[in-house]
Length: 206
Image (cartoon, rainbow, N blue to C red; front, side, top):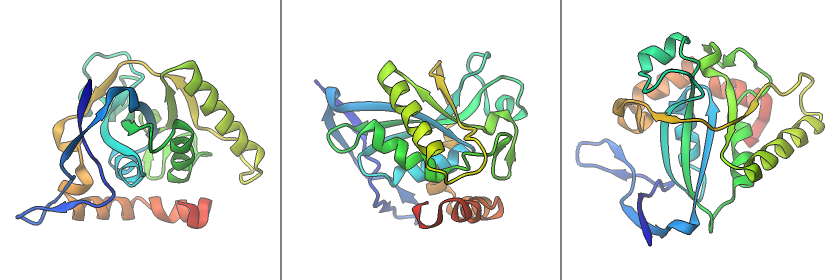
């Protein structure tokens, strides 16, 4: 049985009104479809970063880990629902692996910052890896341990490894925000100091 899914290719198409759009849908066998959930601060940025990773075919911005059903962005951003901004990733397991996605994730975040990510402060913006199986948990813990053992950072790795709970998609205007609103997105990302901090932490790896 085939799952019809939107391809998030590294190259995007240009629409008639000048807005960047993701490329057309294709089908892959469901047995080749993998799911991963990562939280790296602002989900606009995490979505943008993972759309560039080969093998990723779908990204959805949303919320996970809280206690309120069907939360809205306005509820989550206040920090009272317990949710974290996160991105649900669908990927083609014949092209990439969960371990490879973990390796792609680390250089997109500040893994030693406990209070959020970059200019976004609060528990709703903290970094986390949400595992969906014992295998994902083991891979995530091994990846974190390897980073800690590398000696790259003096501070402990603050990124949490947590069991996945109900994931709620954010409102439509948040989906593909960096494509729909490229100027606002670029201004936000630059003003937040995200890439400057990533350059300090990771150099050319980010």
